[in-house]
Image 1 (cartoon, rainbow, N blue to C red):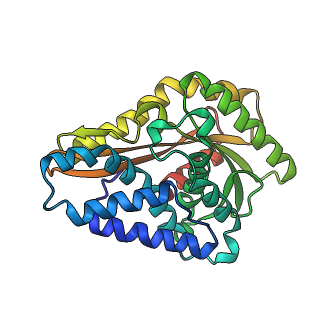
Image 2: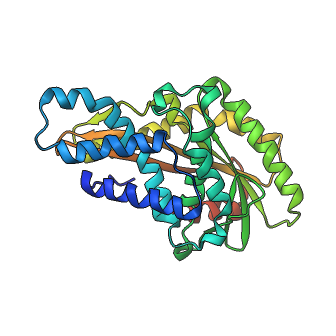
Image 3: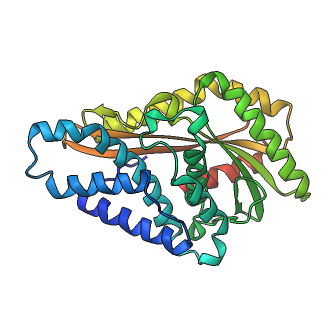
Length: 296
């Protein structure tokens, strides 16, 4: 994981470009959370140099949450902006559903998680689209998303985890959905993966993860992801034992707003990790190694 940094002005511009790109796809950007984020970031971009300490405190929770949210839209835009519009019908649909939902991610409940669930699907599609590295998203996938690598289609079902108690149930549901997709695609060469975003259970979007410097920040986020795999991989492995052997592993994502104290800088830190299924075929392990290299 690298710590990506940019100025507030550039982030504000990138978000504006992302909004215009979504409009060009046909996404209706009505009043709602996307417009709220634009207003918050615009105001702070124009005022942060002269803002008083009290003004900073007043805006801080909304600003942190807004920055946390807009970077997902920016990441999707930057990865997919050069893909012809006529190939992005499924992405447009996900984005249209994703611009709704609660403004603050900390206010999200299981009953109001639909919007961010679709954004996660779009993020996985965007992150796996690395044609210059031999991995290309399948935009008309029979599952939540999918990608093609080394001549194989890999279907992906995506789950955002809001409770660790429901992790196994979520992976089981995703695996059953993958089995359906794999039955429709009868090629022996094709595979399935479960993608899990565990951000919600560990770090709400309106708080900061603080470390002394960039090195400590990278180590901390890497450690959080590694710990998640160590403590909970047995739960998804248990599911995979009773599911299709074409399901070859798990894609994990963790994301948080963070501060590197040494530079007094707020950044969004995201980690993607690929965890092969236990006793996976050597060929499948190599395929997942190539995926991990391309995505990171």
